[in-house]
Length: 341
Image 1: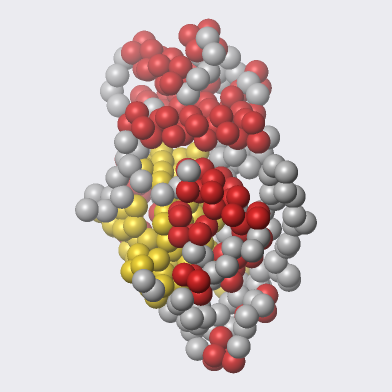
Image 2: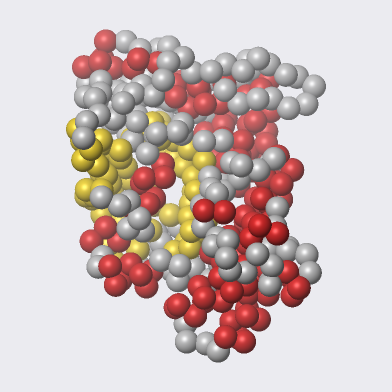
């Protein structure tokens, strides 16, 4: 049974310029212990979709359903959501400095997180905070528990955020661009910490990122979003070896290669559409290299790509494109090999 089932999620905002339809009919499930990667360019609706699940999309009009342990998160009361946030669903945000209070020690903040949901003595909560800091590999955790956020590096602060998010052993951890501001070495360390924490507690992770390279390292399944919609949904291996949607192809082509072979980056032409506008039946039409008349007249449904019922794509291109795709790019092969490993 799925831990989280999101069905036909719509999120919109009333602005002075009109209604912004930020999320349009998104559906996905998360299984216990699974890592779901949600990828796409900035403005694709990734963060808004997950923020709406935790009641953090202020001023949004939300519809659809998001069933979590028998409760529809989209229709839960404020009291129910206060109980779920932190305790059942942990969150890691992109910039830890905006989430950690500069005037309090990291230990104090973790202790308060624990005591806000559980009736435990402060001393016991402090020991738990030290254990968590040690778990996420903060050196000399017992001494550093009394340090302030500015005394930690960016990567260390992100580890503190992971420790805080895991303080109550949540069932789901939502990580919103957790490695964007970090260099590649520290990024790898933070991702390993997340994998270790998941292995220790069996936590499901929803990883939001624009970087398919990060997804290749940790995700079990991948949802590719564009203009508030799901363009493609598949297991990690299918996304890299047998992708179907032209937008997924564009994201892969824009990734830098590593090692001896270095191809020139191939950006996706044009820009994402304004979500204030009425979009073509397929929102990727203005940027798609394969567009034909049907793309402008009929909405492509998110349907299975032959022969894998689990692999779905919202595109009118022939299903066997995913199966017969020729790996002419050494960069694609390298990224796919990373995903396979």
